[in-house]
Structure formats: structure tokens, C-alpha cells
Length: 302
Image (tube, rainbow, N blue to C red; front, side, top):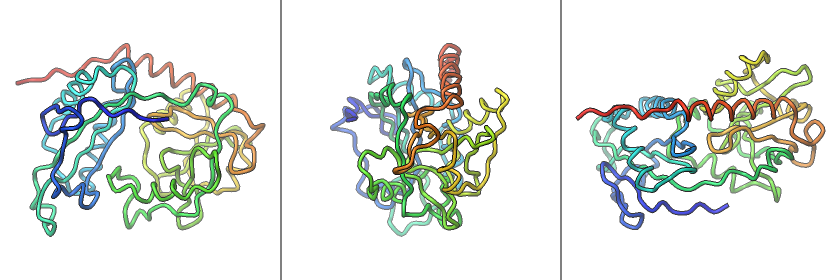
């Protein structure tokens, strides 16, 4: 599925045609991956869970000793301008913030002018058939970054750990690859969070201390499941538990809740999307509809 380039991209406080949007060759994001980002799903021109994404952007910035000079209202206005310039109705939006331009030897406290880039692109989610028959995943031979080295909870622009895992996928037709941690526990996919339904009907997902990104959609699913009466366990998850699961699915802002029906050459459950997964997907999509209906852009003040 090919993503079309954004006709217009916001850099700083200006909107540029795609071919004119530039950052400096001395930008730390370009030089070192020294930055952060968020990806939002756009429904009917509305950035879903914008407040949650901006909150996580600030948490990532703090973890990297970055100071964001914009209020949430100012960031929302930048997002709105980008969507309007591109006339985006159904798509995805990426906010990238780098530490900015500076001497390659500079310490973080010497760099106080972060650069922001926002782009919106048309997006087609997986075909609806994928949400019925599910997708296949594999378990990567590459382990997830150690939290004490580079915490996966930081959504940083340095994504090489995830990208290398994707480049090294071994099985043709595999949709996603799952990274274990140094203890051999499953953490998350290269672009998604992992859930399974165990033999007791409980929803299980790797815990934060397994070394994962605390996904916005992951949090939504946990809250929806508990509200519906499902028992949810956040814990260490071994590969054997995935093989023996009744159901499994992955989550991401762009994917929503996508059933997993095979892990490598082994079917999960009966090999089709399970009832718990489909019920959560419908509840999630109703939550999206409710969010869209109630959404208002924040007021901006001069």
C-alpha cells in the first residue's frame, strides 16, 4: 500500500509545498535521530485522540531533555492548518520534533530551538477482509532495546531497532514481526502493541516493564475491555502463550484492532478472527464515531 506524498507540509510555523519543505543539514534529527514523533489517525478531518498524542509527545520530549516551546493549543492549531492545507479527510498525520540545528558537539542544554514538522497523508487501512481472516506475524530474532539503554516507552525518531526487525522478516506474507526482550519475553511488534486471549478468556498484554511503547490504542483497548467486564492482565508474555492463545490481535493508531490468526506456520485458535477481538473492534469503532461527533478544535488566543 503506497502512501502518497503530502501536497503541503508544515515546517516551523509555515506551510510549504512538499518539494520546498526542508530542514537544515545540521539538524540533530537528521544527524542523530535526535527527536520525537507521533502518528495520528485522521477520521473525517478529525485527529483521533489528539490530546493523548500531544501528552505523549511531551512525555517523550521530557525523557530526551527537550523543552517544547508550544502550548497544546498552538500545536493543535498547527495540526489544523496542516489538515486544512491538504484537505485531509481520511488519512494519517505525523508530528516530528527534532532538537533543532546546532553544533554536533553541543550538549542538550545548549540547544533550545526545536524544529517541528507536520505532514498529513491520505491513508487506506488494511482491507476489511483482513479484520475477518486476520494476519500472520512472526517472532523476530532481533531483541527489543533494553529500557536501561534506550527506553522503548520514548517515541523517538531513532527507530532503527524496529526498522531492522522489519527488514529482517523471514516469512513472505508476514504482516508484522514481534520483538522479544533480553529475557525472552515478547514485547511488541515493530509498529504495534500485542494482545492475546488466553484459555481462561482473559485479555493479556505485555506489561510496561517488558520494554514497550505505551500505545494510545493499547490504552483504549485496555479501558474498553475492563469496562465490558473482561479481565485484563498486563504481565510478562512468553512465545508459548501466544502459540497457545485462543485469540490474538495487534493495535496501533493506524490499524485500530487487527486480528492475528497465525504466528509463523501455526494457526492461533481456529485460524480466524475471534469473538472477543471482533467485539472489541466494534466497540473501538463506536468510540471513534463518538469522539468525532464530540470533537471541537481548541480555541486559540492571540
